[in-house]
Length: 77
Image (cartoon, rainbow, N blue to C red; front, side, top):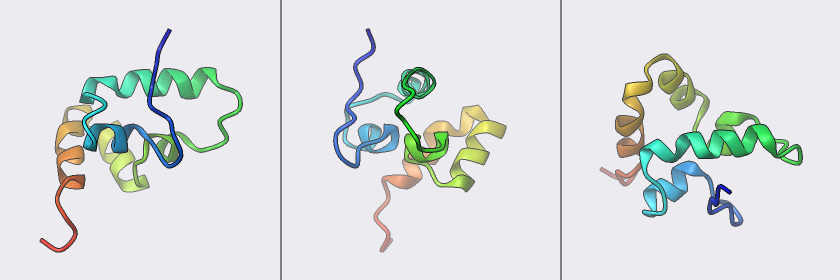
């Protein structure tokens, strides 16, 4: 059984930023998205990605850690 932190407002990206997930855990989140018929969000929304981040990741899966690292930089820097 896959256990993923999906509290209010939580997503793969938030779990990663908060130290609850590793980059490779994205596949667990995707599996849940496929299996849970009650989820109405698009996959990129469920993962917590913007459309541009999602497209970058789909086209370049090895860029996932870079995409996630950019999310960890405060907006004012």
